[in-house]
Picture 1 (cartoon, rainbow, N blue to C red):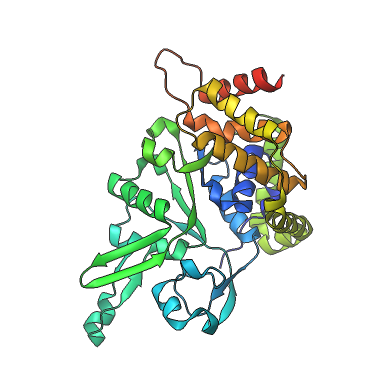
Picture 2: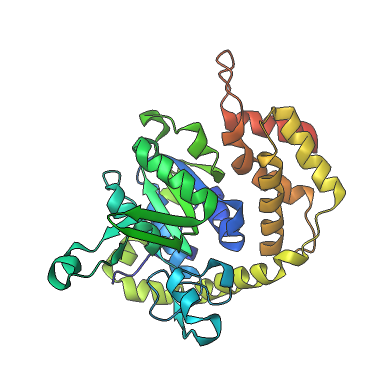
Length: 340
């Protein structure tokens, strides 16, 4: 198995790294949409984050890595065994790639034809959604994803469950994952329904300073020449960051969100004209997760300022007469509300 690049060793791309850490702390925020230049470390960062996260308890022998502590989310087989009789193992957090050309059967699962022909037994062959349960589902060039797969993902993302009824099979299993999409906005827009499913949206750009570009090349070259040695040199930083995530998850529920923060979030969304209430909810959840990561007892203006662009830039109404990019609009609104 290939050794992933250490998350702590990623140079720059602060907003992308912050967004990934925020959703790792609180997956209920939703997925992360990463748009920007090619070759800026998007897929590297996503795989690095999964490798950084601590293993999770899972039911031994379960194809879906059911959470033994969440009885309501158990698959049919685990529920039939009985919660008290489940054996537990520690499993790594999965990162599953969803190719643009994937068939529906590959994504949702289908009849195991080999077993059906050789043994005459109807059994279910789990798909990519099963493998991604309790992990990350990564879609590169997500804005080019075919419509029928978009519809499928919307259904599963809303319910947290994959239901397959075909060829005499009726299977229902948990499919709760953090959706990560990346792409280049010049190659096409994302469907509004799918765009709304991403909790956070970040922009990545090619480094524009000499020192940063040199450091990127230096670290990547050192990693490719000796991945094991390079990874070991970053073990301390990785351990500290992992502990920070674990601590943030444990303290998340205790982070206070004062009324002043709620009013700030609502005022900002009203100023930007965002549709619905998902903007405020995402903004508050992301700010709370960031406060937990920082070890703070409550949400402050500083947390709101940092997460506002990533929580709101993809929720703005489009005005054909206004050529101002979404990020600039959010930054202006933030400065008007919080001060420069």
